[in-house]
Length: 403
Image 1 (cartoon, rainbow, N blue to C red):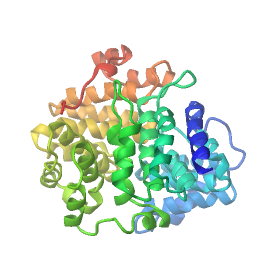
Image 2: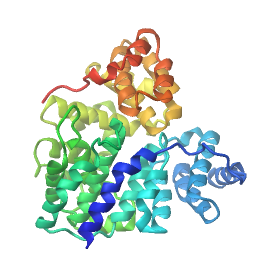
Image 3: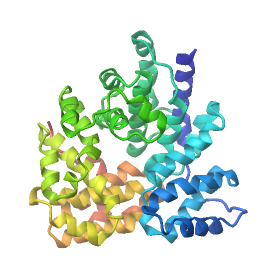
């Protein structure tokens, strides 16, 4: 019974993604600014203001709709620019909406906003739906794999952006942990069976979903799921990750960053953290992950990020700028100008080419190239880079070394 429902529900994602839209495209009858101003006032003296927003904004859903809650979020962000990263809030809002009627969870995904909260809405809906999923036997897993292999791939009815596809595979990584009772060996093995070949490989993001579930639980149910396997020390963490090889080991280590939080906030610590990888490509992906983590910690501030990247060893300095700039775009489309400004700083520091190459990559990774959003982004880039963007050269950009 569960297996059939799982297949039908996941298959619906192929169609649901085509209905993504940005909230705020229609007028709201209520004065949502009043809600936002009250929340900012309420949270201003909190020890950590973003966490207060994560808790308080979802409460407006007692009176407002799902879409209005995200519009309140936009207004809060306009009032407080330190709150661009609202991934946890996206989880919280969509989980509330999905819990109202879990049979309509795919509809909630279809209503999730693009270009804000780092896809937290998508992940929160997915996890809410399958939080209490049954554990599948090996035979049931084998039966469901053919359907899972098509969920995140293009079809006649839907063409995914790279970001949408990565987010989908990442969510499947989380799902595999639920339906294997938090068995990372079986779960990551499902990723191997699910991932399709082609121009882009998404095995790493699926693995990341598996191991993120271990090291970054959000809800009480998440903590309960991994209670028997979650490492308690750095030594236990390294020992767990060393039971895997290759990309799985690297993903486990990369997603274990909360266990090394102090270490990765210094240039020397970042080098030590990422040096545990055994190939150049995996080492580069590790740096990408660390720079992505730190960018919201620096409140997406161009000055702060530039100063930090300048302290990074020469070999990784350009990647620091580029990864931070792409993280801005991934987090919120309204940060595009800041991302391009950061590449301008990189150019002044002699690292502009790698930063702008990452912008080219993200032009075709984040946007459909036949949309006005793509043209607007390309127009922000300077001179020749703008022309290359409009020529869709992002498809040919290679940022990471081969294994």
